[in-house]
Amino acid sequence: APSPAVAELTIGLMLSLLRYVHISNENMRRGQWHRHFGRRLSESVVGILGVGRIGKRVIRHLGGFGCKQLLLFDVDKTITVETDLSYSWCDWDALLNDSDILTVHVPLTPATKNLIGKRELNMMKPDAVLINTARGGVVNETDLCDVLLDEHLSGVGMDVFCEEPYFGPLVSIQRCILTAHMGSMSLDCRLTMEEEATLE
Image 1 (cartoon, rainbow, N blue to C red):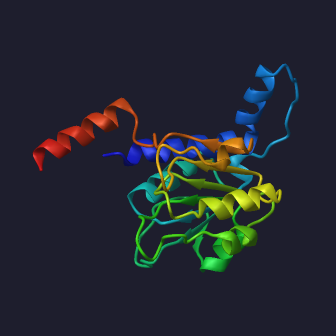
Image 2 (cartoon, rainbow, N blue to C red):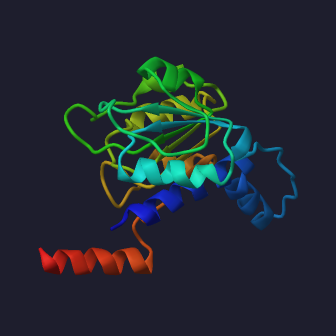
């Protein structure tokens, strides 16, 4: 039930991070007029970590933007993908090295806990964007903060955290968009979730 809303939030975070919408909004409220040069989604290489229900919906939405290239990574290599976009299945290192945007759509398991730590973050392009709308704990938040303070990565969108509510150090980093686990928070999706819960 929450898949459509999570996928749409993911796209919204991509657009905001690429065009510095969050930073411009904050600057305007401080009386600062600065026009940021950003990047377009259509010119970006998007890495999808986890090609399940939500990952596939994100791919479908990206089709409307005509993205330059999709890089897909999943433990299940039998997954079929329907898109007119150019895409390729890649190994783990290529996903990290070559993505302009890396978006996370995997469950939290012993195998995925801290899957993205300092080593993986530093393998990403210096101006790459990272988005996690999946589960807290997949991205190591301490390592992420350290890497951002070292001026690596141009932006991060985090909707999920190890401990929620989140009050950690990422709140002080301007180029992070932090949302309160609101991926599923659309009226239609929440209603469907509640209906499905009562039927089980």
